[in-house]
Image (cartoon, rainbow over all chains, first blue to last red; front, side, top):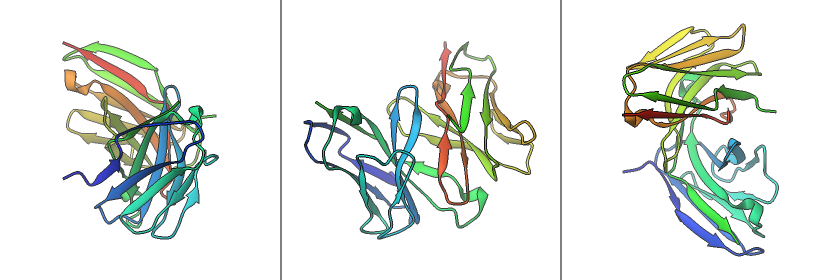
Length: 116
Length: 110
């Protein structure tokens, strides 16, 4: 019973189309994160959230929006997808209320997005 | 520029050998984490070492931290084929945001 799930696992989109990537967590964590992973760049933070209704910009937010309608769900939205957004996207959850020892993030399995 | 960086980019060893991945970081930290990512999976935490700790062990894994030189290392002893993965160091603040390096690719051959 995976604690962080993502859907879809694979997606092919057309340039200019709208793409929504979904994430669900059962860890009851306050914080959720969206990263993209590209060869040579590691994981880069796109958006994150401190709780339902909250979204914050990460390090590379341009071209992306995020939505956190509930504690469990966090979506990443590409309103006008471009080929440069072809990547693997990871969602994670975490909670820092316990101090540094609680800084672990729990990742989903990833979504491979191809924009043609 | 990267706030955390692993080196080397890649390592190749045979089963049973030991291996060390190094990490340098550029910010003041309260904790540093090591993650492992196997092919087709998301990263998973291996070890978290707090800024007031110098060493942390988890089975065959040993992490060290030197805050004066802003560096950390992750050593794996008696490597196994299933240790083949990408290894990341990550630094974070109490906001929960983590900064990952680009990762070190480790291949363990039979």
